[in-house]
Length: 462
Image 1 (cartoon, one colour):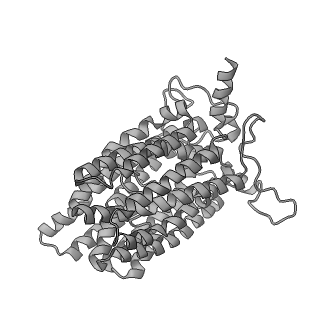
Image 2 (cartoon, rainbow, N blue to C red):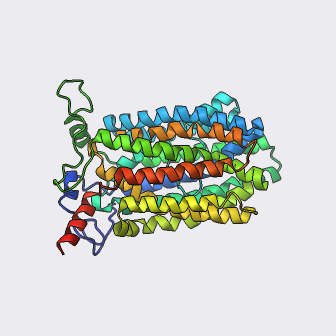
Image 3 (tube, rainbow, N blue to C red):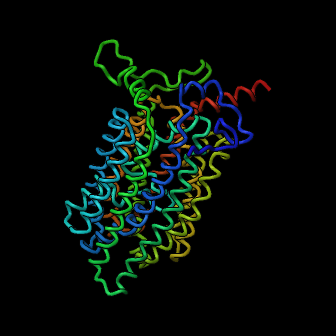
């Protein structure tokens, strides 16, 4: 069954203009839209598992180790492993295809969950976090955007739709993921239900991790029907190697080969700029991941039930912005959309520190999530749109690798400093995310997508 975005055989929505000549420079990428239902289903299953494990994981570590410093240290070491894992996923996906990588990651996630069900050993926790992605999901409202799947899933989506529909596709993917994450966050509250049924805390945690393992296997199942052309992949990766070591090596040619009026960056430049901006964002994200769960626990005495309900509500509220992201991006442009939504998110985040109650802090977090989600599909579509189609996995992996590295530093720093100032996660996240927004603007303000360049040229002519 073939899934289309619109009402005609081209797969474009009613009233949508034809892709520009610059967009068509993405060669044969009209995309196999039969992949979309399976990608959506896989994201739903993964987001469900990620959401409740993101809530359960830090509290499980705290239950066994009773220290914010220990939580931060384990997240740090796990993040280092996760960074290497993400780089490997990007390179391997570009080389052999993203479908087998996605299937393998689902299986690896199941192994990680089962390992935690039977052991609270620090080494097991670190490996499950780093290799299996357990507890790594981007927080409330992200819908499973982050983690080891990221460098394989994003290129798979980009090659499954025409260029002019990527923001819409990423928006729908995020919408489905966030709705599934809402159910997953609510499932985190089942820890208390299991206890009321007579289970010990250890037994309840084991059952939750077993549920996570089952959901990860479902993710692998949904990835099996994905279609990926072996000939196209061979052509893309074989036409010019990433590096042949020769004296005349030109592995970083300009992206999309647009007209002279369109400013471009090479693959090397793109990765470098993403590395700088994402490194700043990684510092901020490291403060907000599992440490934010712990912040709610310490600041307001919230447990899995309260935080699970909170994250359910935030996911529900944060789902709708994904559907409207493409409209805002069409008006403001991708870069301005990303920057403006992140600045608003930082302002709302800062308001959480003096919040007197759990409810007020929760409302501010929900609004911050709405702002962040408005810009997320634009950022994803923008990166994939200006990246060389043969190297999208590598761009996604190595562009985000510094974020994985820096996000592994801030948890251990934030966890230690929380013993002195409990609001350190909020202030640390706001500082680095504001720096990220500024850096992102200066890095990409002169590099519009080909479709945006065409609209700008038409406006000038009029």
